[in-house]
Length: 394
Image 1 (spheres, rainbow, N blue to C red):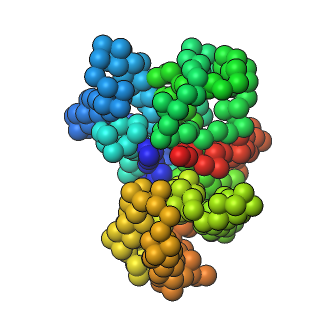
Image 2: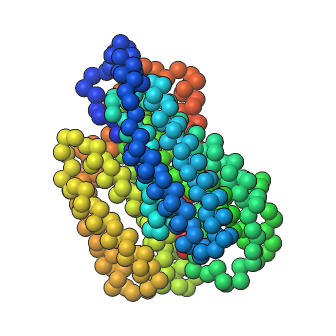
Image 3: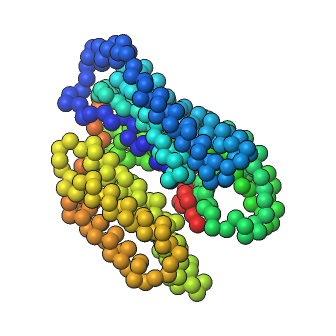
């Protein structure tokens, strides 16, 4: 799955609230410093090749696949560029020293051909207004391109019969906003048929998926910045609740699927498939813990990055390889491994009551003002419209 960089700012914790004069000095220095761009350019070129090659690989080499690959690559990278340059331009306006976007190619392993892009903030974000502008500008700019691209793309998508030849594929998740766009723009779908997204529509879907991830109001995700600018230190408690609700949602999702199967007489036969369809939230629960560990500079976490990555990757790999096997021994072992991982989180990690891994670095206490408060609320509400209970399902 794609992974847009959750921590787009990576700003250090300030030791004191910056003064207006100090912020102005840093602004002049940041804007006058020559930009390093060569590594960014090479990574961008590699990501273009990765996205194009991934599309052609999955569709199968042909002239039509090459045309589709170009459409998809241009659309997706346009959305990601808009998102990251939204952050970058807002940072430069506020005098925050920011790098150009670093794109992350990941051919074949990611269904999108990329893990997204990151920018790096190398100076303190001085005020709540700056924090809001930098945090909200990326998702809003990306959506400004993703929504019309999806609307146009789905209107030009094919309607084909479900004759079984498409079996074994991945079903993309839906959200309130996606359903609205489908209702307004998608072609009519007769019984026994379905819409197969065009390359442009698929890129638009990916852009909304990336935005949904970044609009989780936790840690230093984009919405974490927005929520901290709105709520201040109270956001640290909200982030803890949001993070733990992701874990709860995983278990509730699996339980609801299993309960439906039990009522239908299937028992636990499809348990692996239900874990696969719900695991997104478990994986991101651990991804946020890893990101919190990376940004934690006080050594409070005793688990570390490697055990989390190894355990989470192992659990995900088992589900990916064996989701169709109804083996009780396999799934007992899987849940045992998950239990051990969560026990470590409770004892030493992010599930401790005193954990500060998801705390946001403090910033100046300047009030947002009415206009920015409205923007902050609207940005956070967009998560509700973009929320996909199961982004990928089989």
